[in-house]
Amino acid sequence: HSDEADITYRLSVEGGVLRLSSVRTTPIGLTAMEKDRFAAPALYGSVIRIVRNRAGKATGFRISMMGGRLRNVLFERVD
Image (cartoon, rainbow, N blue to C red):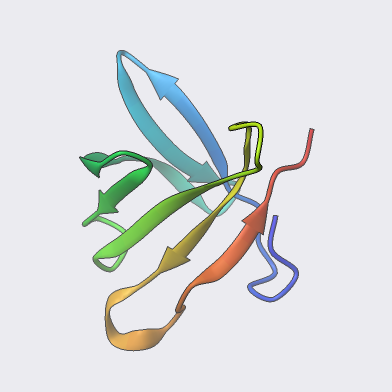
């Protein structure tokens, strides 16, 4: 969830593909670019980077959209 962007996204694996979704969007397939970094061309050319703690557990992700709508905005994991 991001208070700054006022939205909660959900990451899930469906059919071997990592997908991003929210109550406002249908699931969007992500394309791996490198470890912990994914492209989301269907979401305004976004790049998503997984954030991990020192133990290696994913604690959220940062998203940047082409055109500057969002830049390096942190979405924190909500369990």
